[in-house]
Image (cartoon, rainbow, N blue to C red; front, top):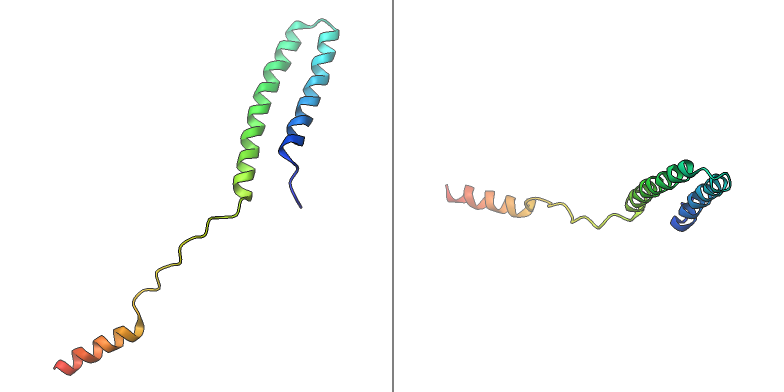
Amino acid sequence: MTPRQRDRILQNLENVYREAYDRAKAANDAARMADLDAAFQREQLLLEVLLDIRDALAAPAAAAPAPDPGPDPITALETIRRITKLR
C-alpha cells in the first residue's frame, strides 16, 4: 500500500480548517477565527514533522558495510603449522 502524497494530506488539513474559518468569519467570531488560525499552524507543523518521520522510515536504508569476516581460517592453520614445526 502506497502512502498518500504529502501535498494531498496537507491540502485536506487546510480544507478542513478553511471551512471552519469561513464559518467563524461569517458569524463575525473573531476569537474563533484566531483560535482556528493558531490551531491550523500548530497542526500543520505537527503533521509536517510526522510526514518527515514517515518519509525517513520509508526510505531505503543505506547499504551497510559488510561485517568483518574475522581472520582467514586457512591462514590461521598455516600459522599454527609453522609454529609447531619450529618446536
